[in-house]
Image (tube, rainbow, N blue to C red):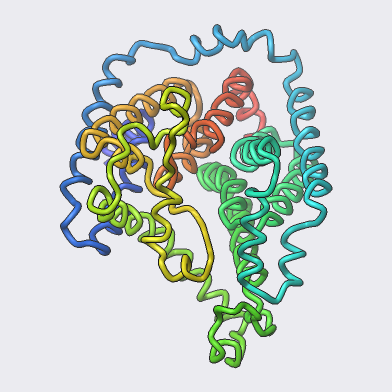
Length: 418
C-alpha cells in the first residue's frame, strides 16, 4: 500500500498539470455527451489523443533541460532580485493597492454598490459589461494582470512567508476588489491558490475560511445582480410580470439555488458550449483558416473574425433578441478547430502539450503544493479560454514570471513558515 501511494505521489509530482487537465477534460467530455450524445466524441478523442502523445514526446525531449535556468539567464533575473526579497514584495503589493484605489477613482464608483442600488437586472448586466468594454484598454490589461496573477500570487506568497498582519490586510483588499467588479470568477481566482496550499499543508481553518469567503461573495454578487432576490421588483422589460409579482425567495433558498446553478455551470456548461461550437462549425460558420487568431491580424491584412462573439446570436438567440450582446468563451482547442477543423485539434494538442512540459520544467524544484496552487486555476480556465489569451492577458505568463523572480526564496520561506 505504501509503495502504491509512493508511486502515485511521484507520478502526480511529475505530471500534476496533465492529471488536473485530464480531470477537466473528463467533465468537458461529459458536457459534450449530455448536450449532443455521441455525435462529437470522435473530435474529442482526436484532441485528447494528440495532446497525450505530444505531451510524452516533449517530456522525453526536455527531460534533461532546466528551463528555469534558461529563463533566468535570458531575463537576468539574478540582477532583478534585490538582496531582501521582502522589500521587493512590499513594493509590488503597495503598487497593487495603489492601482486598486486609482481604478475606483477612474470608474467613479464602487461597481458592486452601484449595482446593489439598481432595480433593473438588464441595466446591471450591461453595466457589468461596460466596466471593461467602455474602459481604457491599458486599464483593462492592468486590472486583468492584478486579478488573475499578481493578487493570487501575493496572497499565497504572504501566507507562506508568515507575514500575518500584511497578509490579513492584503487579503481584505483582494477580496473587496475582486467582489467589487461584479464577476464571480475573480474572487475564486484570488483565493484558490491559498485554498489548495492550506489544504495540502493541513491548515484546514485557513482553507475553510477562504472557501466561506468565496461562497458568501458569490451569494452577495447574485443578490446584487438580481433585484427580485432583494425583494425589489425587477424593472427589466424582459422580466415576466408573473416573476415580478412572485414572492421573493428566502435567503436560504437563494443561496441553495446559487450554489446548484454555479455547480451545474462549472461542471456541464463548458462542455455544452463545446458541443454548440462543433454543431455550428462548419455547418453554419466556415472554418476561419487563420483569420480567427487575433495575433495574426498584422499578416492577415487586418482581417480578424472573433467567433466567440459571432456565435452568440446562434447559441443564445433569446438573449440576442432582447438586445443583449456577449461572448461565448469556449475550451482552448476549439479556437484551433474553428480555424483548421480536425487538423486544428492536432495543432492544439501540440501547443498545449509543449506549454505544460515547459511550465513543469520551470517549477521543477518547487514544492508540489506550490506547483498545483500557482497553476491549477490557469489549467482549469483552459475549459473556457484560448491558450494565447490565458498566457498573456489571462495572467498565466505573469504568475509564472513572478514565481521565477521569487524562485530562490520559496524553499527557504516554506521552511520558515512550517
